[in-house]
Structure formats: structure tokens, C-alpha cells
Image 1 (tube, helix red, strand yellow):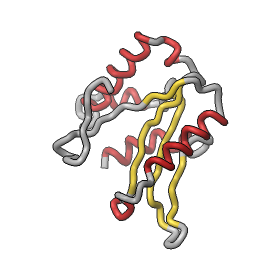
Image 2: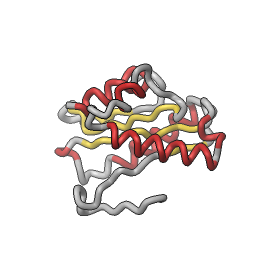
Image 3: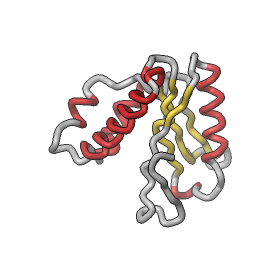
Image 4: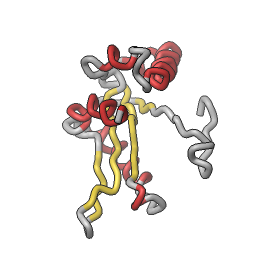
Length: 143
């Protein structure tokens, strides 16, 4: 349930910024997947307060992401400037549609939209894939 609250913080911005996409199955009219992209400098009101609360289950996760973001901006300050970096924030494919190669066209579409809708020079994404949770994937820190 906490993931629902987590994503709600981003939905107003993501649904109106001209960069996020939803993949719809044309035959069944079902949502097959979604890709949320936002300006890297954007943080919704109240978000930090909620996710620095030790009682929140996602606080350790957010602490890790904020640390990664901080290190990236320290190495390259321009990343933190509004309108310079698009954050490929979250992608999800419905389980009924996995294995149908939807992620790549969604990625290409979001990249194209980000170029058309802003002054974005950079893109950033954090990879939280856990090889034990997702045995057919691998994740190397720093890549």
C-alpha cells in the first residue's frame, strides 16, 4: 500500500508534464505499462517529510536514492538545475504483458518527449533491481 502513496506524490506532475507515457493494449483496451518521467529537480510538496519518517517502510529506500542523487549532483552540479535533467523515475509493465518487449519502445518515446518538451541535456535513472527478486536480471552498482 505504501507504494501507492509513494506514486501518488508524482502523478499530478507526471500526468501533465508531457514526458510520461502509458502503454494501452489496443485490442483489449487495458493498461499494459507505464513510464513516469519528471524533471530531476522536482520534488513534490510533503514528500521529504513523509519519507524521512523512520516509521515509514520506504524511508531506507528513499535514503539510498537521495544519497545517489546527492553524489551525482556533487560530481556534476548541472544535473540538479531545473530543466537540465530528466529523471526516468519509474517504469512498470503489467504481468500479463511482460516479455512482449514493451519497455524499449516506451523508453524511446519518453526520451523523444523529454527532448521535445524541455531543455533537457541529461537523463538519470536509478536501478534498484535485486538479482534475488528478479533472477533473470543483473545489477551492477554504479552502472
